[in-house]
Length: 321
Ligand code: AQP
Image: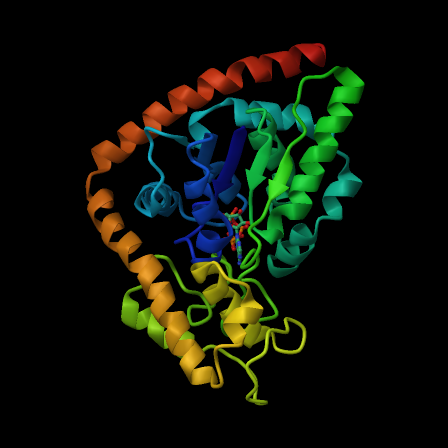
């Protein structure tokens, strides 16, 4: 089974990235797995170049610290493989403007940025290129990426119908719970790297007391009943989902164990610290050895190029280049 997924180095990863994506990646890494730090995608945001370079290596180190073994999976940096940008152009000539303007994430993010970049509109086509270049069958992602996955499927099918069978049509795989971890301060929006919500976002490198403080301050409601109900009790249900995900249970059965919000919050904080503290400590070690990190990236890129190049050539030839 060929698997591919990616994470943007647009800031320090958060609990949503961890529960929605990275944890799934670790458990699937003994399949034929490709995981990328998708730095080209981060150019849609205004990040100073030196900071982007640092964040790219930070993100690579976070993935290794989370348990990805570069001996087992192919771990690489997207811009080190030129075929992503090249296939992107071919696929931009297959995708339609209308379908890109309908993407929810584009509507949300373009509304927040004045003079937004064209890349923000075309980003899902680059994501389709990332996936299709490797003939990925499954793409483990959080819920927010489902619509982009659907677009990648449509682009693959359209390409295959128009130019002949080149691409594998991929499938999204999201975790049963915590596929959309919400901001702790505003549970109507997802936890996000690029939203400025320090108290609402648990970063994977937060220290334990910081995590405890954020969970304690999480917005809930005033009716006092511990019950899983995403519509009526979004803040509380978010906490229940986080704990459910970390303890491999259903959020309803987690809810049944608690009478008081305070007790639930204490256990959520403890479970999150239990999951993230070992990651943070490993990160501190791994990040120190930049030479080793660069070796991981180089080896990963070599493996990724070997897979991507023939696929890119097949697509280019099929289109008449
Ligand atoms: N809140 C979330 N809950 C569950 N999963 C999430 N993911 C993102 N946010 C949540 C999943 O994490 C993977 C990597 O995400 P990304 O780096 O591609 O960024 P994104 O989806 O655009 O969301 P972010 O992290 O909030 O970044 P910004 O703010 O830069 O856009 C994906 O599988 C995603 O589904």
